[in-house]
Length: 238
Length: 238
Image (tube, rainbow over all chains, first blue to last red; front, side, top):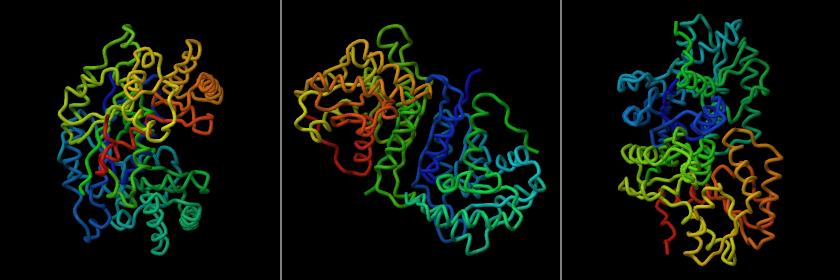
C-alpha cells in the first residue's frame, strides 16, 4: 500500500497548524522515518483573519486560501485539510478550486460524535463568534439530527479571548479557568458532549477539564487525514 | 518590510521537522497570526535514510531531496533550510538544483559557536556515525580554527541508538542517561561546548543535562531562518 500525501492549508493560526502536525505524527503507526507520512504544510499566517471577513469588517481570505490550495495540489498533495474551523465558512470556494478532495472539519466532527458518543443528542460548541453566528456547526449537526447549544454573548466573549490568547502566545491558567466555566455552563444547559470547534482551543482546554466527552476538532481532522493517507477508508458521509 | 517565506526540506526525520517548526514559531516576535512567518514545509519522511547511503549500503536520497527543494522553490519559498545534519552530506547537489539560497546548518552552528562561546577552541560533536565519519562538522570547524572531539566507537553507538529512538518515538530516561554519559566523556576529553549535531537530539538532551554550553543545531538553524525572513541580516560567512 503506497501512502498518500496530505496537504495542509495552514497558518490559521500557526500554533494550531503545529498542533495538527504533531497529532498527525502521533497518530501514524511508525517506527522509522520512512513509515511516517508525507505531509506538505503551507503555513501561511498572512491569510487575512477569517472572523472579521465573515462579519463584513475585514479582507476576504478566500483568494489566499485558494492560492494555497492550488499550491498544495501542485506540490503533490492527494488531499487537503484545513486545520481552522472558522475558515470552513469559505470551504466551497476552496474545494471548487482544486481537483483533489478537501476534508470538511465539521462533517468529520459530527460523524465522530455519532460514532463515539452515540447517546449525545446535544453538543455544546466552543468556537469563534463568527463560526457560531454563521451556523457552521449548527447546520452540520442538524443534518445528523443533533442539536447544538452555543455560549451566551458574554460567555462567547470569553471563548474569543481564549482563542486570541493562543494566537498571541499568551495562554495562562486564568484563560483556562474562564473557558472551563463556559464549558460548565453549556453542560448545565444540556450539552452531553463538547466540541473544541476552534483549532486553537486544544492549547486551553483538555479532556480532564470538563465533565463530558470533549471532541477535539483538530484531533478528529488529523485522524481522518491519517486514515485517508494510510488507506483505511474514511467514514461514509451520510 | 515584507517578510520572506521559509521553505523547509523536512521529514528527515519528521519529529525533528516538528521541533524545527515549533522553534520558528517561538522565535518569531508575533502577537497575531499575520505577524507570523509563512513557512512551507515538505515533510517527506519517504526520503531514503541518509546514513546508509553515506556508508554505501542504502539508496541515494539526493533525487528525492532535489525534487523537494524544487517543489519548495516552485511553491514560493525564498530560502530553503534542511533540519537534518546528516543530509548536509548532499548539500551541494541540493543547492545547485535551485536558484534560491539553501542555508548550511554546520556553517550556522560554527558561526554561532564563535559568537556565543568565543573562548571555545574545542567542540564535542553529537551526531550520526555517518555525519561524524564523513567529517561534516570537522571541516566546518577547521575553517574557523576550531577543533572537534568525537565519541569513541562504543559511545558513538550510544548516540546512534538515541537518534533512532527519537525516530521510533521511544525516548526514555535511560536513553537520556546514556547520552549524558557520552557528553560527559567528550567534556572530559577537552570539549568546551557541545553540539547537538543531529536534529533528533533536542528530544534527548537539554542544556541542563550537560556541564558546558549546548549548541542545538535545530535551534540555530531556526534562528537563522527567522533572521532571514524578517530582514535581519544573517551573520556574514567568513
